Amino acid sequence: MKKFVLVMLFIAMAMSMIFAGGSKDAKKTVLNKDKPLVFFNRQPSDPVTGSIDMAAMNFNANTYYVGFDAAGGGAVQGKLITDFLAKADPNKIDRNGDGIIGYVLCIGDVGHNDSKARTEGIRKALGTWNGSTDPTVKKEGSVTVGGKKFKVVELEGKAMTGTDGSTWNANAATEAMGGWATKFDKAIDLVVSNNDGMAMGCLQASNYPAGVPIFGYDANADAVEAIGAGKLFGTVSQNVDAQAAGTLQVIRNLLDGLTGSDVYTKGFSVPDQYGNKITPEVQYKADQRGLFALNGPVDPSNWKSYTEGNRDAGIKQTTAAKKKVILTIYNSADNFLSSSYVPALKYYAPLMGIDLTIVQGDGQSEASCLDKFTNLGNFDAYAINMVKTNSAADYTDKLKY
Ligand code: BGC
Ligand code: CA
Image (cartoon, rainbow, N blue to C red):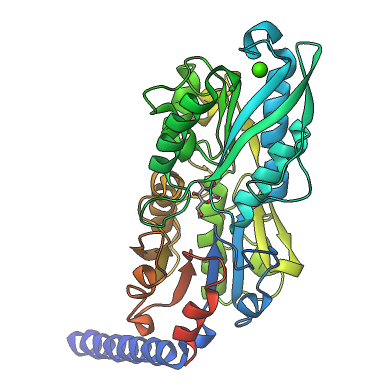
């Protein structure tokens, strides 16, 4: 009997060694160039024309983008503002009583699709859109405030670039707002920002005109709280949980060997093999090889449902095999990525069996990210958030062998 147990034990050990060796060999045979590659939040694209960098998106059959519906979001932000104005008291909003709604605009990054879409959405809603997202190209618009028609003038739009060259810079917004408050004084009736980080930055200006309505984008925790406190008037949720979980889900699907439509349906529109499914709708656009979360307005009527800790119950602990993924973040100081996206990634990754290594750049030099995008053979998949939207090739070049 003892002998039998020993023989069985020996067989079990031998089997497990063969198995371990087998999986190691399988790992070795996957070249970096064939591994899953997911771009997220900064879509590989031309900073001037906005056209998608399809060479990057077709790097291999396992390349995808995960983001959100930028154009739809711009429209949501525009409507949030005009809905607010429609119900506002015209005598209070038009601070200098000149019949004009004057506003200032914080632009994140003139070369970033999301930033462009928001500038467009805001200007279209206020009638100041003149066919270009250029900070200086705009026209006089019109809007209804409390049943009364007003002209709209964009007093100034400015790309918020920090002294170090980083974009979407909140400190630059504080400084710009300080300057605007002095320069335009009571002509400012409204402040609009391409993101919450810059909106919160504006509110930091010591001479911020108290009570002037201000709108952001992202639904970061501090911004949602500021809505509750009556400081911020509205923001837009780009559904960060669906995006962070979506980035990881695509990677999980690819690592599990899924192909074709399974890659963007499993765990999205139908449960994956572990029973996980992201609750909000995420749309797939084949022409961009991209998955896009939807946006929703956040204002004093619904801010509470956006307070932190509302993680997606559709994603539960799985038994998925542990895989190693390296993920880059263009700027460790970006408010949205650091306060919303990264915490969500850190929550969902262990549930999906993903061992995540996050490396972060300084927001202005691609090298600050690329220099940490190393030891690539040690990882099973890659997730990339570039400093410049046209830098995808710098990353794929490192994966070419
Ligand atoms: C966010 C911004 C963020 C940017 C970074 C955008 O989608 O709304 O807040 O700064 O991504 O790439
Ligand atoms: Ca006015």
